[in-house]
Length: 221
Image 1 (cartoon, rainbow, N blue to C red):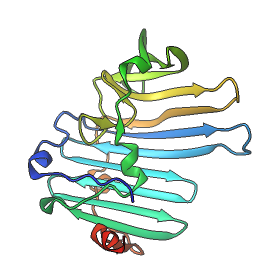
Image 2: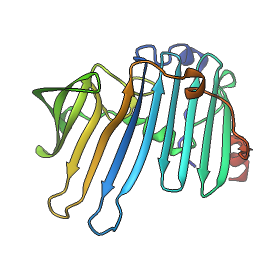
Image 3: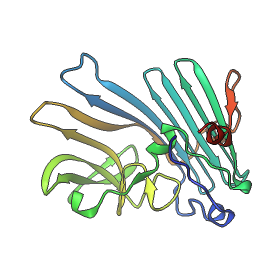
Image 4: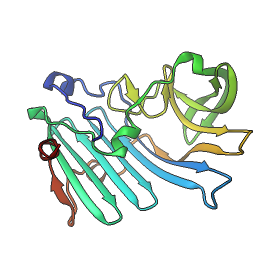
């Protein structure tokens, strides 16, 4: 059972009040020299002060998470090898959510300050002013990337998508010199407005999805 996050109505009214409206499409690539093909993950994030959505795809897995603090609803969709399951949470009833990897991707803990170093180098990536960052492992540099200062991608202030205290990491490259493996994040497409809000934050459950309940799963356990 994936972690469940319960919201009170008070928290809902304060949800993401500091978020900047934007939509971003990322590609994560994990390259292992021992494997013939690299693992590729596509992530799409859309957010406003009151709504948040993430779509996640890797191989035969497709997932979607949408939280609407106006409608007080959450939907989660997961499609694994054509097995399609949907979850709905009513936030006015403090119902649980957080069943998908799509949710977990944007619920990462902040990178600690001793795990990175901000540099003076600057660069504009698709309209975002960025600063260079070095990522550290016990003081040793093992990767670098670019941070949008002041931007946060996530549901709240304490967790989010690849972030540090100063902002959101939108691109990076991590390399292991010993085994030759690498892990990269690339910003593919970005906008500071939501192109199609009705589609981005749709709470509709597509045909073919079986509706399940967190409470049903609890009873089975």
